[in-house]
Image 1 (tube, helix red, strand yellow):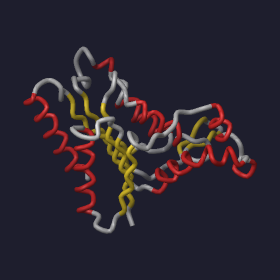
Image 2: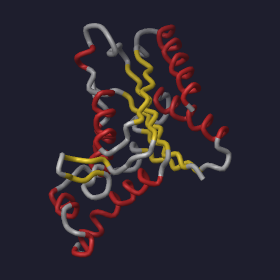
Image 3: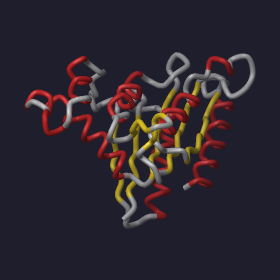
Length: 202
């Protein structure tokens, strides 16, 4: 049975373009995988904590030597890692906030990038362990950052592709809906183009 991990990160629970487009992907994926399983992780409502010194300590303590307090601290991180490792496909909806993904998404990344779980260190450096997966990353942006004078301010797509590759997810397709704050017609055109790309990549 195929498993799809559906990640939403927009702080907007209604009117969000990244949520709209990630939901469209899920709907089409379910139609093609009627026996498949969908796991939805909403980062805006999951209240994933940012990294603390205590959490780092738990990360680097062998599982059989963790205290009860460390086991409790690391439990959510373990659950998030397990969701990633169990998935065959990930669809991730991410708006651009101040040229980058929302902080809730960064917090999720800090929980799933785990030495010994999703990457390891070898003789030639880090090796991703979350291999054999595909990621569809849906990016929404108010302006245009794929080209032109604002291109240097795009710390959204490049970051996500790099960090997913670091943990072994190298089959990454970016679906970009940009210019959505530049007028109604521009927004409609951007969303329609993104929907076409989603349909071509389900």
